[in-house]
Structures are given as structure tokens and as C-alpha cells.
Amino acid sequence: HVGYTGILDPQKGCLSIVKAAENLNENYHIHILGFGTQNDIDVLNECISEIRKKTACLITFDGVRRGAAYEEYLKKLDLGICPVDSQKDFILTQFPSKVISYMVNGLPVLCSDIDTVKTSNVSEAVIFYHGDEPEDIAEAITVARKQMAHVDARKIMEECHEKFIKEIGVLLQGGNR
Image (cartoon, rainbow, N blue to C red; front, side, top):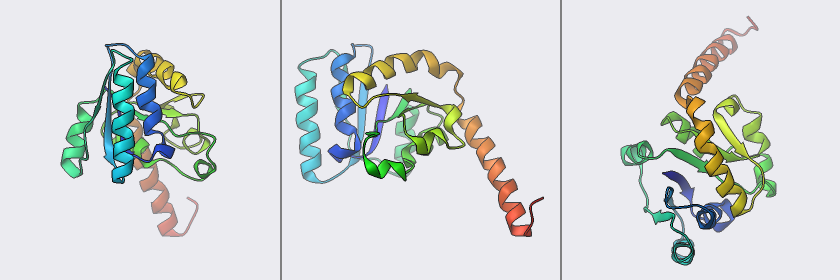
């Protein structure tokens, strides 16, 4: 159970993961959860409909969830994916919040090879893949299954929280202790 959550803007990667399903077998279920314009939703549903004809992989658009419903939804997934096109200029300064959302909920994260995540404090809990094509994403999903056993996302988040508390304490005291 691989999940993409977030904006359904075709420029933000949701269609790439749907298209990746064409290269996956019946052992996989791609879940799409998110929000967007009616046009974005229509484009997504058309893409899902076309790819379903070509694969045994199950693909579902599960609508929108917020708050506790979103957290419960994430608990049913095995892997959260952040398929951001690494060639887009905006990604040079953006950290995808879904990476943290997935990790806080205990999900291993598969993310495209972007510097803002690679150089972050959570990078050791993220499985990175190279390339922006649906085939690259599908291959990364199959490899991630083997790699995610050693990833403890919640532990990494706890360590980041502890580090933050210490660093903010130093800043509030006005020193470099």
C-alpha cells in the first residue's frame, strides 16, 4: 500500500505515481489522496482509468481526509511517496511537508532525489530515488520494500524534536552553550 497525499496538481507529481502503477504488479496498491481543482481531479481520474486498463496494480483515488481521518488513513499505508520532479525550479527552495507528515505517522518515505530533503535532519529516514520518469518511481517502489525494514521514522522524528528543544533553549538563553 503506497500512498501519495497532497495537492493533485499534475505538475506536483501525482500523475507520475499513477503512471508508475503501469510497471507494478498485483502485489501493489497505489492510493491517491488529496485536493485540487475539479479539472485536476478529472485529469487524475482519467489517468487512473487509462492506467487501470494496462496493469494488475490496484489504483484508487480516495478523496480528501483531514485531521484524525487523515492520520487514520496514513496508518493503513506501508509507504508514503513524494514524487517531486527534481527538474522543477521551485524544488530548489521547497521542503515537501508530506515527508514530515508521513514520518510523524510512522511511514517510511520514498522521495525523489532533491537537495532540500537530502540535506535535512530527516534524510537518514528517507529512501531516495533518482529520475523523474514513472519507470524510475516504479523501480524505486519495488526496491523500497526491501529497504524500509530498517527505517524507524518515528525515532528519527523524536531525535529531531529533542535536538530542536536543545537548540531553541540555547537561542532563548542568548548563548552558544
